[in-house]
Image 1 (cartoon, helix red, strand yellow):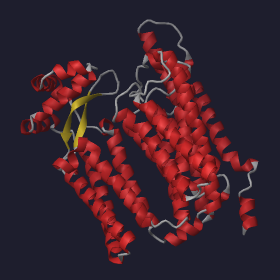
Image 2 (image 1 turned 30 degrees about the vertical axis):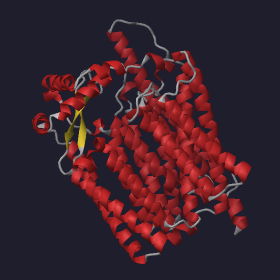
Image 3 (image 1 turned 90 degrees about the horizontal axis):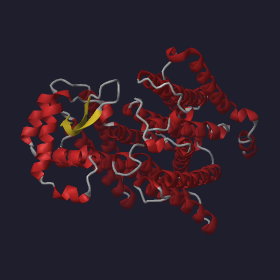
Image 4 (image 1 turned 90 degrees about the vertical axis):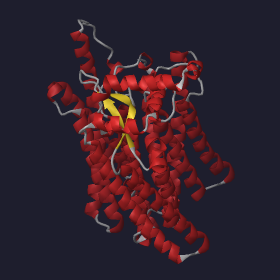
Length: 531
């Protein structure tokens, strides 16, 4: 058996052939786009094809975990290859589309100059970064799962790549006016390195989860952490209103005109039934977590049984909540009237909106302190008078919140999925030694990639802002993530920590990467808020 495993893990040129074909195919699509012009398939359509392939590949690999089948394994593997192909094609075609868009704008204004082609490489905003992040994750998955014993890796990583593309879909692919600070040859170097490093970190996270499952960690322990994550997501969306007011309020858009992405309005509108449904889901997750704690620390079998019941009920509540949210965000009937009624019931929302507007004007701390609540309220009322009848609901107005809720739902689903025939699942995973080795290799790559990210970022920042480091929120987040992977390697090399200890480091490191990727852009202010 060991000899068979050794032969299956031997790398040959055929091992990496699908990855090279996906890369070659992506550049072939670029050539076709240049040859056929604007009539070629859109980059958004190619992104959706990549999303479908990642989902398909992940589903077949999950099926293969419980019902081994060479056909399911091959479909899952080549589904991943197709996903990488469409993902790269989308990114490359978007590059050409961005260039053509800028040319058309320049010609319309009478400017006949020819812009620098690398100025429009798709690394301008979070949509572009998400495309590249998903590609990095898909490519790393394809590369490491080339060995047959690691084909199951795709079952843990492709769903995450699909979630990243789902976020991109909600963000929207509208082109933006490139901020002057981004017009630098360091942008493709710095952001390209970030995308690939994040992708490798995602694979390292997937391997860590596989290791913990293989090592016999109880699914109930995983359920506690997934429930805590779900509760945190539900509790923080809609500015903490779900648990405090049993209401979910969605962001609103105001049309920008000329085909540009709409502006975010400073007001939020309550979506009917979503808040109570999310609150119920949160309380069910809390109940399941408490039940599983009782089971793990008091060996209470009854608590274990009820914990699984509550977890399944929480999954159903999460499904209903997300469905109600998606349907509610498609309903734009009487949005102005609903907003007026909401503001009449709670006029303090004018003040909140006014503060957001003043904050967006980049006023100093002293100027903000000098403004009174009455002034903030007046700003909010003037905004409603001028744009209240234009506001509308959209999934794109809440991309991170919707994606976070879907991610929490998927986390609950996977824990329930892992609780089914867990012994059979563990048998199908690679050996602990093989998983530990792959986790170490991917952590080394993530560490090196994040180090290059910090170095190139410092050089670029010095050129753009006159200083290499300023403790900006994204800079600090990237540094903490890099230090986490440094701790992973230090404890392994100096202290001999392996196995579960390394897996926990890998999981924490990836969560910090995700916070750097998303949290800075939507939760914290800073110089990197555009991406």
